[in-house]
Image (cartoon, rainbow, N blue to C red; front, side):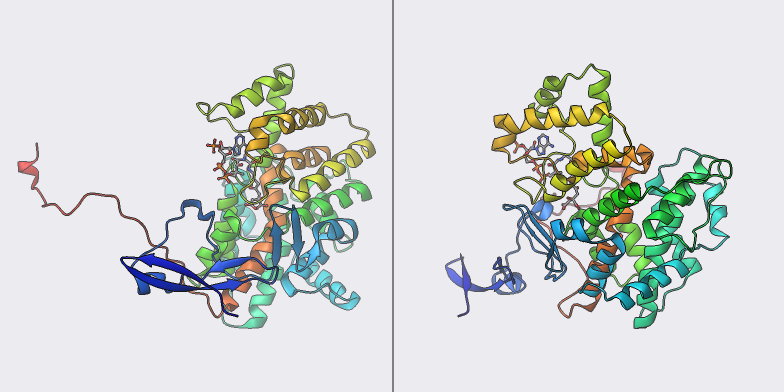
Length: 427
Ligand code: SDX
């Protein structure tokens, strides 16, 4: 039976259809609202606005559920690899052996970047932010690898090309920023192992791959692979709606992820924990500041627009901290501070009343520190992990028959019409 929402306005009643998702969530289809009623909706931050229909990722913020193409994040974290998860997101199903081997060969074949791209890196100021470099270099890929936007095969190879080269670009920016020789991808390394080797191998100290470190990186990137219509994914969709090439849309997503309220939070968490450590572990002061409405300080790694309970990824990441720290025989004081901070916050009425729980960024930085990633590259690591999700959501949007160029309306609150005054008459 068709369901409707009634809008009663200006003495008239308008029926707007209710659409229902495959998990039972419901939405008012307002596409005809303005045409029927002259009204628009007002929803800064889009907290109550669905921008699209999507079959990629399902989240239930109240129950703390996250599934990629129907498979729970817990199952994928336990059984999958990042490449397999990327395949699942992009293609909608888990790969067979032959499909997995095929994508592995393609990712290997695409792992080099044009030698001329190294010149770009040489000319960034030494302390340039790696996220700014990454968004620039991803955009620059378009110049080296033109995309035939309307040829399916070209789009598919472009998606894999980007998925492979993003590692190489990230590792190159790190090596060159340190004045080190660039390490090339190896044919005998898996996706994650190759990245670690490109980051940490040197001519005088060969990098020894540790399978637990490779597993930790696989897990880190699986947990970040997609998250429905978050800020950066929405940026990819909005920019992509203008029919730009994939590289430009992804470059926009990287920029959107950069901020401390979004992907930049993992770096901000470590900086916050380090400050607490330096200040002698004064957790109560940090919690008090986070609760003070007159203080702009936020408890980084806490809170979420959708999760109003524990972020399921944070639960998995927290366990990964213990595992990788004990394997590397590292006792990281920041983990102890994080655990104490979580314990204090989760008992505090402010955090309870505001439904503020740890999100993925609260523990992820500790895993990255342990495997040797520099803090200023934490958000780059988030971007590499999120790339399969951005690619999938972009592809879904350009294939969506309902998709149109994104062009929201506004509620104008400026001045009414007034006359132009020539400069001689201005006071
Ligand atoms: C990611 O969307 C996604 O899916 C994102 C992500 C993904 O995978 O793509 O999950 C990745 O970005 C995780 C979030 C990382 N950011 C942080 O950890 C930064 C700290 N968190 C907050 O800034 C905040 O919680 C956000 C940005 C995550 C969510 O912001 P909202 O939904 O806009 O919530 P809000 O700012 O309107 O806050 C609601 C209330 C406010 O208090 P009141 O004015 O109503 O009294 O909660 C308070 C806020 O002050 N609040 C916090 C807080 N987060 C919210 N107070 C203290 N510390 C915090 N962290």
